[in-house]
Image (tube, rainbow, N blue to C red; front, side):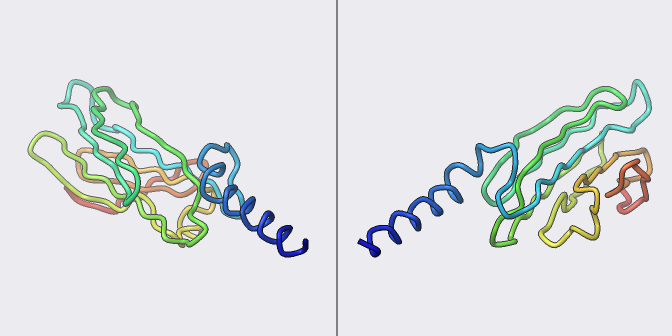
Length: 139
């Protein structure tokens, strides 16, 4: 009888981790993070094109045509601590690649919000609220 109970509890826990956690608003045993990609380019400039993905999730192509327009998503850190998101950004003839989130960034994004802003001279980052942008990538 105890063996059946142990198997039932184990099945329930595995079900929670792999099937219910992705649907939940709150994370189970891990933190929820947000990533924001912001168009901080001047008005009437070409649009910012963004494509972001992880090993498990292709978030698709996004066109940010207006100043302060943003693309954002949230996710639960993997229980295995192997979460990794990257983005490619294009603005006119300029292109760059950035790591949008990597496991272990709790110190880089202590607010659990990572913000990237595209400006004319490069990409800026903030892991704080209020947002305090610092340049991290040249175009």
